[in-house]
Image (cartoon, rainbow, N blue to C red; front, side, top):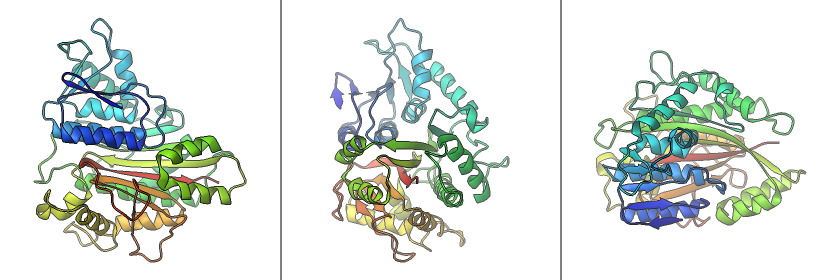
Length: 389
């Protein structure tokens, strides 16, 4: 829920994808300088945290003098709350993307930006250590802060500053899966690791190439990109709640129930996100305009995912995102993409690829082929579910 106050947009309560979309609609329609986010929301309904990450990015892009209002009282020491925020993907993103960070006093005169940056710096330093040292239980996230001196996290980049190769990302994936899954309840076939590594590598490489600059190829003043891996184990009543907020997942969960004798369904969730201009804007370049229809955006998005299509001048480009689709197909995965005015999905369990160029995506909001025009957001977010045996 988003509450309008005098000069602040305040988000409270559980966050489902539909609720985040409504909040995005209000922010895009009338962006305000001040925003307050929840610190420790208890219910996400699958996708809510990722949605708030994109909300924070979009708000900061639309509001040059963006001010993040914390829940910290004027007389309170800020370290504990800022530390809690910096250890959540959406909180870390909001702290690094906001122009200013203040306490909750009426005049907002106390700047907490220096304190917030220190907490974020500590999180970044943790990402330079072994994954076991900074994993948060069943969840791990890695975020590159492009406007910092420590953006090239060694798990993702070579010492020379280039994105690591596929072998490095397969090694990373093995570390991530080992940390977030525990045999036998969360076992994953060894043969799946290279395919998951391929997915993460190609999607992250795409953010490195296309998300760090604006439409005029100028580096963003503030920019973050990253990935997260989390395991899930859901009972039937939890699945029903998730389906109520994500109807596009209903048939996917149903197919998994038919193939599993367990009362619980288990998944690994992979997300790759950035703060760029989005797939359609990047693909269309100077041809992009606000007069384009959502169908035009859809066509541009499909072109990005189709084999041999590329907006890069390098001839070897153009296979990465198509290979992601193939790997997801082999793993019976579920893909959701939120970019521009679209929220798209593909259920590879019920709709496997028929050919390399079969990249038809459905509309996530309507769970159909009818496109729903959503608020125009910044950043491209890929959310992936991979079933565990």
